[in-house]
Length: 393
Length: 168
Image (cartoon, rainbow over all chains, first blue to last red; front, top):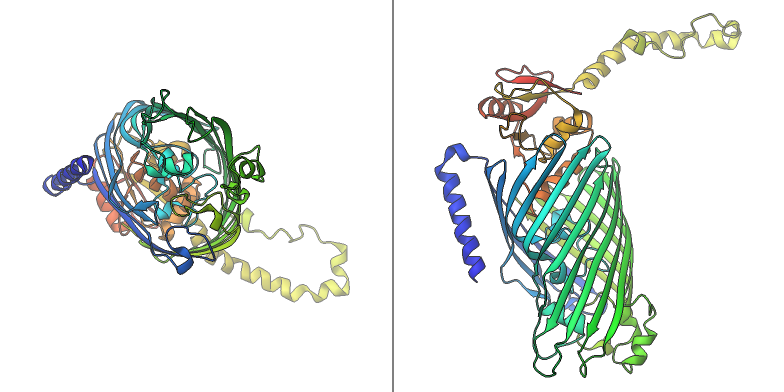
């Protein structure tokens, strides 16, 4: 609750300041969003009791920024996100940072960000909970897992950034280090179930990204990644169990007048050590990729078509090995997902948006272990239908 | 402009084939086309030439911007003029046709890209959105009153009390 109190106080000060100091009008900005979704699936739980239609999908965000000078920007956001059994909607400090420009000119800008920052990973991670910035109700789950979103969501630490503006386009680079913000979803997904003790950071995470976009942003290319060193704080064995992960995404996007094509590849190599006797030592690389076309029919309407594939272990794509090793406890269908999605977006006004989405799933890799504790009940072939209404200011 | 308006199919020399009966039969419609062309031009010209003027506060010490720099300013990536004065960016609503024409022709980006860039900065805490005004009158008024301000109006409108700068 302490960070919340801090941000609430900061917001209060910012608001008071806007009201009092007329000459600062424009330097303080408040923005926000709220959304409500309904999800129905033919089988398997996703964002709540979806087989019986779930309304456990609510996003509310309040955002304030204060530009004290061209060199200094303070910004923060509080987020409440209800997502079935994965998140209960209690408000969290999504980010709170100071952005300090150290050097800027006609051809470059470089600076430092301090505080809690959203990780610059892939095309969508930074604003993944803002419905208007997503291409669909649900981000491609094989790259942006909602079951372990907190693993890669944000970092408490410091980030160096540099942008170079050239006639051939813009190059942007970031390098950051700090502590990852993790929760119980991380443990459930990484360790398949609940083990004694808590999973926590062992060392600082490191993040880096490099992006290129052409002058008018027709083409956007990027590579971004994070390394994480985690441990289990149990006292059951002499050795402390550890998990080391690298999560990286290669991204490409083309923006045309009426359509946008996006494709991304995600790799997640991991190393588990000293979890015996609860779990075996193992090295495993998960991967996922998708291709996505959004087409603006006429100004208020947009269509989305996407195909994605993801695998828990790229060397065991059909899951037969994990099924054999776990004596059937983890069925083969839990180790892969192939998803075809079709979506429609309707921007009713500047403030309101409605969305509908249909997905055909083959496999259960993307499903949350917290929402589906009994793997034996996984249905391999399933459908999802969702609608969402969103508001912003 | 007269060069542009000359129909490409208009023969400069008399083609012998045009004296053949079937071509003579086509003469009346061609004459009609000649009559229509100036009329079409009158309808076409205002919309094609209804360009935008980029305006700044009179105190801003700039007379022209290259397109790349204009784009960096309107995407909120450059927030200072060369003399270190802070930039304040004013825009019309996303669905205003002048805003859409300004984005496409002056900045050469699609309006949805501007919105996406601003949203990413606002909702990741790495930047701010431009200030939105309701219409051109308010645009002129706010740019006139705000130090370091930049905005745009249609070239049909007098830029009273603000400075027009060239984007090239």
